[in-house]
Amino acid sequence: MNACPQCQTSVSDDDKECPKCGVLFNKWREREENVASGNLSKYATMANATSQEFNWTILVIVALAVAGLFIFLAQNAKEAMKDI
Ligand SMILES: [Zn+2]
Image 1 (cartoon, helix red, strand yellow):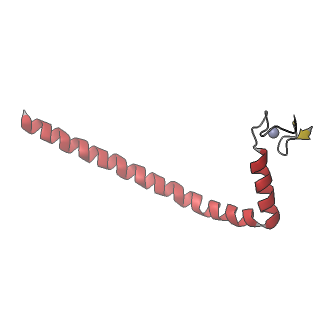
Image 2 (cartoon, rainbow, N blue to C red):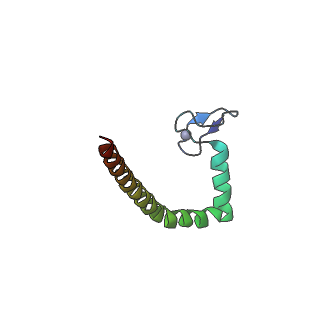
Image 3 (cartoon, helix red, strand yellow):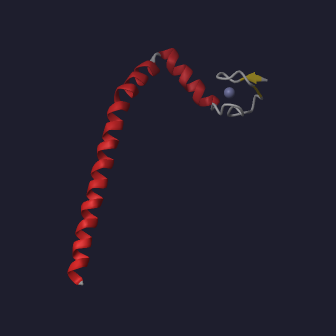
């Protein structure tokens, strides 16, 4: 028997993930190793630094896509009106 590193639920040795919280043990171990070697802190701050910009980028892309769609639809509507 092992204990889940996150929620301490007892899990069997051949479980690949925690049945309670869904933690993937090999991912967790990977993360722990990265924390131990100091990789994650760098990685995490990088992710934190980019995640906000990333959200803005998505927002801008979605806004442009919606605007583009409206322009496209408006033009199509005009084209359709011409045919009538
Ligand atoms: Zn768990």
